[in-house]
Image (cartoon, rainbow over all chains, first blue to last red; front, side, top):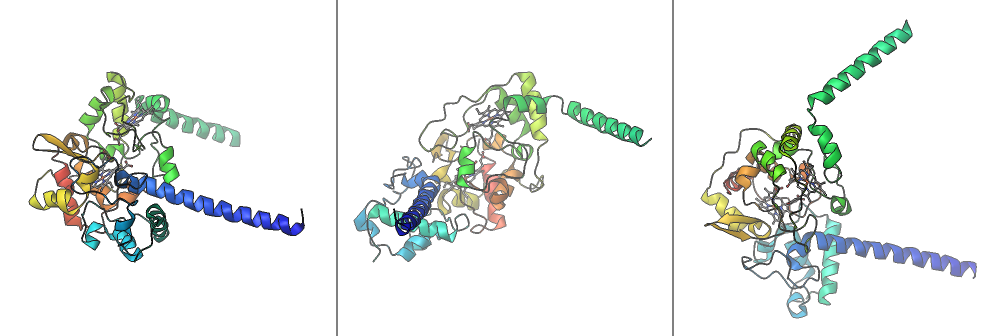
Length: 119
Length: 217
């Protein structure tokens, strides 16, 4: 193997490693905080959704619903809770709990789940 | 002469240490043997990451004396009924209700030991149990508390499952701790899946909610 190929492989490996771990971290953040209500798959069927739950938590796999929301809406609702976009207060304000990087990671993760972009 | 001084002071230190141990009346020793594999008691909080929290096999107990009511603790250790609907740190598995049971003698010793573990963040005698329209509104409508916690209402149990049940909080939790927890959650649990509400509710509102939780039979 040429020196260049070796270097390139190493750099690529490193980059993949970093990307891999960042994604694993966001999955961990999602599963820890959001899955309680939205479910690990993001389908809105978390364990808290019993007959008492007054609304349906957002189903992130619903492309048609999710593309109506801008990235700013999604960041805002994570930080300030449902009422910030005139939705249910059952969606808590996580702004004092999550870092800005966590929120950005979650936005990307949710966009992946809906396979959509904001309008 | 020097050697003698050293010997005497080492002896004195040993004496102090033994007295301190026997003063704990065994609760500390029982805890080390039967409980320390799942609970830590040396604060302040150690968790820094989600992985740290997920690695824990049971809740931290370093402020147990501030959090719990003594009579509840002594009774629960002998007959532990599930507090969380789900297995600790799980969102899928049920709590099997398999917490170790202690004998009456061990429970008494453990209770004395645990009630000695307090946090200076908790001011005693401030919050009295009370139901107010303001607190009901916050707990049930304005804030998502009921989405994650089950609680008693009209003789039935309602609410979510991911948080500890608040049914029986009137006998289990010290209302002053509940207030301190809501006001400064990071001190007790730097990593937890409950949001920090101190920036969305003012201290009077937090007091009202803590007083309301203290009425949950």
